[in-house]
Image 1 (cartoon, rainbow, N blue to C red):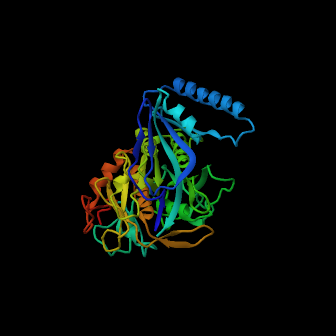
Image 2: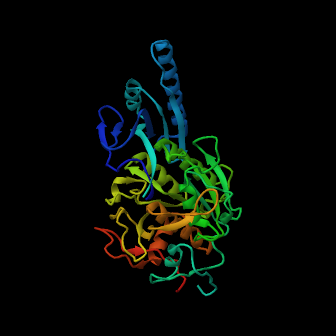
Image 3: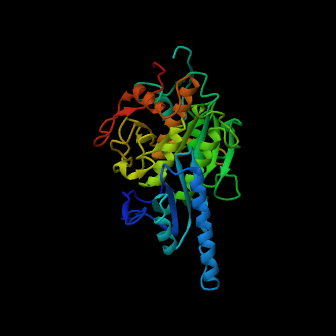
Length: 412
């Protein structure tokens, strides 16, 4: 199943709120990284105060290193710093218990949560059309009934829209992308390649020429997971920050405007306040964000970023309009999309067949790009548009879960 998991979702619990910030812990099944933490500032903390705090942090760490010289291996200290839209300010790094205690007592800190492992687990009137589609999902999203073999779509096909794929990277040289895919940011290694395959498959569904919903969209690879499909929650948030800045014109400015950008995150894990706040900052910046609901066949409210209300959370459906047996469900799910036995691209050429909410989410991301290309308003409100257009097709969707299946409005 093609969902990126950060261990089994469990609600975070507060360890301590005494005389300072909350110190959170992941559930018992989360694979935490020893001495690695994400520190999130209060929402009213200014950039100036944030800078003063990190200066204090550096000075405190340096003074302790001097006192401990030769006694033990020093902690790395702050390794990443985040600032998303002036809404979400945080940093991550390696700190010992004493330093975490000091950080938690700082007035500007809202909460601290452990960093953990991220791991891939593969379980209109002017329409054009694509006959004998290579993947059933394409036909299903453009017709009101199952069983079709033709994909109906407007020839605008998402042109002028940029899709950011936060994943294992993209094989940008794959012929099905037609030169529309490029590397944006690699936060993992020095290899600008998808040596895992998950990200290329996802990107193919978003915008491949033959296998994608938005056949004219521009694709940007944001690599946050390595060849084994592993990474860290802090690294994922750093990728989210870069994509948001680029979409808003603050990086390479690929998208030029946030309203012309969409993002896909076929990943998730334990409910994380840090991840949810970062996702909300992206939505607040006017960027449409599609995320996978998860593959544990449980309530998606315990997973992040799926539990963040401002994102578009996607569950997986089958060819006969059933709920995929692995798919998460619950009130946080916005829509269903095809996610079982989806054919898409693999690195080096050719295709692969994968299943998972990871395969469902890019159908929604691609649909979002397609609708923006048609003139629909982008941003988080686009999820409401997608829900309004969807059909009530899913049989036995799960407790307290929508039966809405995405539909592109072709009229077929």
